[in-house]
Length: 216
Image 1 (cartoon, rainbow, N blue to C red):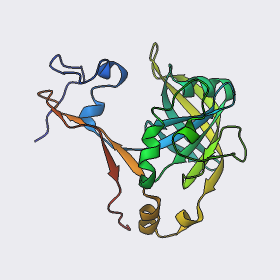
Image 2: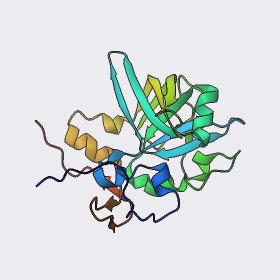
Image 3: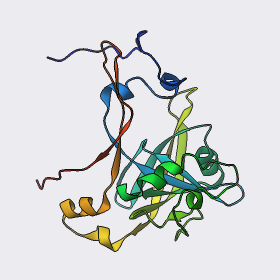
């Protein structure tokens, strides 16, 4: 049986950290659709690499206009860096580098090299000034096309950038999608869940890995 759920935030929700349902919609914890985890890399004002572990975005496009769509909070270094330099790189890390991925969250001093301090290796991009991460099997170089707030007054802003270059590890180029996904070991952000009728919370955020790929 399906329940018809009002999207207005109910009063019985309990935040497990301050501002949780101001930064994120409560529906994100109800729907719980996994998003792929990636790292947005940009340059700080002093030229040092910035790394932003992220999962709010997608890749979409047609013909030569393959694009990266990102949702960014307006108080982040990444937001300011993209507005200033109009470019970024997307790196898709493998699960084996899970510790380094989450270390980037803590390496956020104003002028430091966040990629190196997190345990990754910096490499230059081919077409943009934003750095890439050696350990990511897939890296996309992007140039800003447009940006706008999600809605008037929103702290979240949408950024779309055209993909202008692709770098890919040879090991990830196998044609069989089952084997390719196994080798890449891509991670997915699986939100902690909230019961929509009671507000009861279940567990912390978790990581997901593709465990089954079917040939259609």
